[in-house]
Image (tube, rainbow, N blue to C red; front, side, top):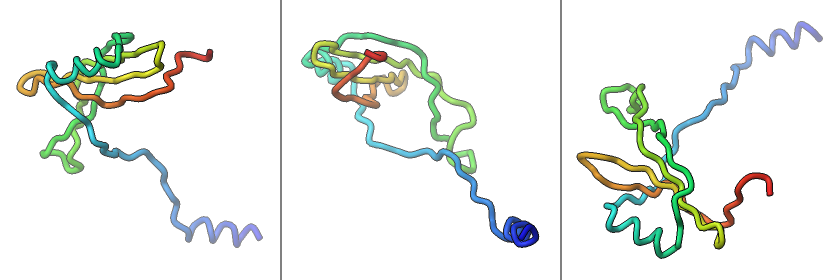
Length: 111
């Protein structure tokens, strides 16, 4: 029985599991387009920071840069309505804000 297990272990290929990059639609626009939407939803800034983001690099074999871009990140919320919007900012030459997530039923912490 041990021999059979050893043979199967050697003959069967191992399966590797790992994350993979996916793409989803992201809406980007200038400040004049994005911030009126946040005002209409009565969302205010809760958290801001610098996010490390994978970006495309046509010179890399997998098409992704080995060095992440550092982009401003912001989370806007309406605690009464429990809505949120997550933004990242792309500076010159783009000068746009990108909505990378928005949603409902916001919950902060374990309450």
